[in-house]
Image 1 (tube, rainbow, N blue to C red):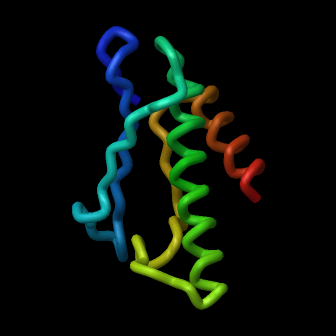
Image 2 (cartoon, one colour):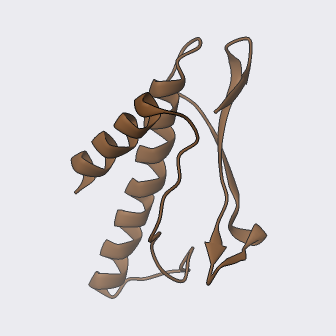
Length: 98
């Protein structure tokens, strides 16, 4: 998570496919819903948005209405920069989304 004194909040994502960087899949997420400086809430928003998009894409593919696939396969490993608090946010988001 990165911001300028609580403004211009962003989170970023890098992607490795088959162990190699996939810069075309790197993303920067603008944090929309978090006022001020709250890294935990910002990380929760970014993870929720990304993983919700993945679930929606899976559902479209299952329904036969698939469009462009964003990734060859879903993440097999998610690394979060931080400590116990950030890990707790990641675990909570994954549990909530199943």
